[in-house]
Image 1 (tube, rainbow, N blue to C red):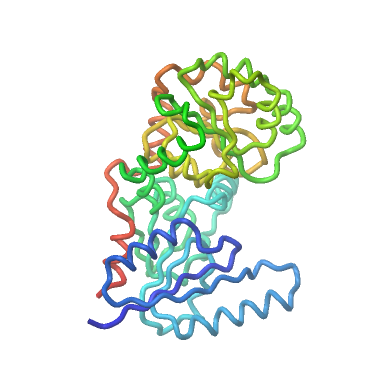
Image 2 (tube, helix red, strand yellow; image 1 turned 135 degrees about the horizontal axis):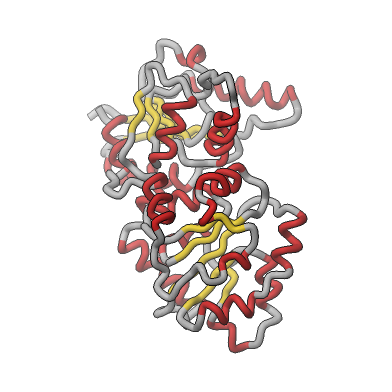
Length: 344
């Protein structure tokens, strides 16, 4: 069998993302002869000479690449790859650029298709929303758009053995949560000053009392942590800080409700068919999108969450509509989809 060469490319500050790591692991375990190569060096430098140098390094590196996989626009335009064989696959994870382009596209009177991804041969759209964005906003001539498979990390968090192991890990640190519902508040980016004041004034005790003792709240927010440290010891079995215990994304495996302004986390968690709320936090375009498209799921402050999480964490119709846009209910294994592409 001929050896398969795979290049993982990341030059937009995202490194080797969790999705790329899962694809790499799957290919390593399921392809007999495979070699991996990596280009991980950010070209987003304010220094023109540094930026130019890294771009030249990247283009030189890619001259000896066969199959290329990345999660963003790290791949150069089609001219640099003319005549090259091999698959060039974009895992179009729903980062904030998709929501930015969606919102700006809606505002434009004259619409010109974007050519950002012309260097790719295949685009895997891990959500129906992403597929819509790709079809409506980007020029896809000669590119195969692949639908029906969630993101690798969304697939990962839905595996029973992964969920069981994640629960065991977190129970080691918080042994009172084993039979509780879990609400995770996971924020990303720099907080707006106005939102910081609101979050600092959030009445955590009142919120925990409203949830009841059947719930446990995890967060990576230092502002909520500061309030939690002032609570009576009896609340230690109701709230916990996760940042130094395990990667916060692992909470997506075991949470019953997610509050976040992180579009990728929201997209991953939608695959679990559980409630997602978007917290206004840092001015991301995802926050703007949710305010316009799903106002019932958009929170200007955590106080607005009071009364919205019921005893069972059940789904509203709006939650179901969000899930329809951000997950495929009958997903194929995305890593297997990629394996079938690159293994001839």
